[in-house]
Length: 214
Image (cartoon, rainbow, N blue to C red):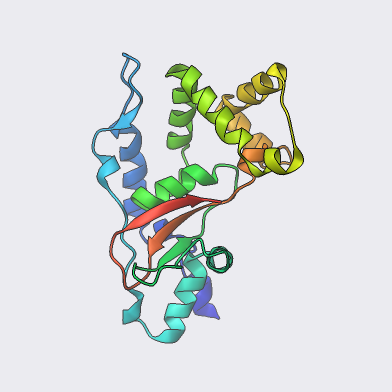
């Protein structure tokens, strides 16, 4: 029992110094061109974390690590729906635990690339800046098309008028900190009801990984 309490509950906690260096480097690597080109990273987009091999550990310790780091309930649910690990010819994927504070999608993307969550809201702020300042019309139209195809619209027959769409869009592009304050309460928009996880290859896999929203 004592050993379980000292195990890291996230990958970044296993090496806090490295995590701090990554957090410091991330905003410095971000490019925000004045010409209207979408924001991007100079070099850090090339990285993907690699899950360490768990087969080297004894079964008891391996099980404790998996419980500490992976979202086993999400994995079970996705596998039952045959949305994960249904193909026997590819490497198995495991979902890492992700903080459900309203910024789970950006946390998942950050873990996928660097093994840390988007604690400083670097990705979150960059996303909202892009939605506000770059090709806003096309972003808005794409969001509307996806929203209409969502479960809430299809199953309930929900219809929005122009004012509804404008109100929803204005809510989307509000500052990130205001979003987090709202999302940790009860006001969560329909498209934010999903859960995001960083999916990595299992202990026998290599650096292949992906992010899923469901």
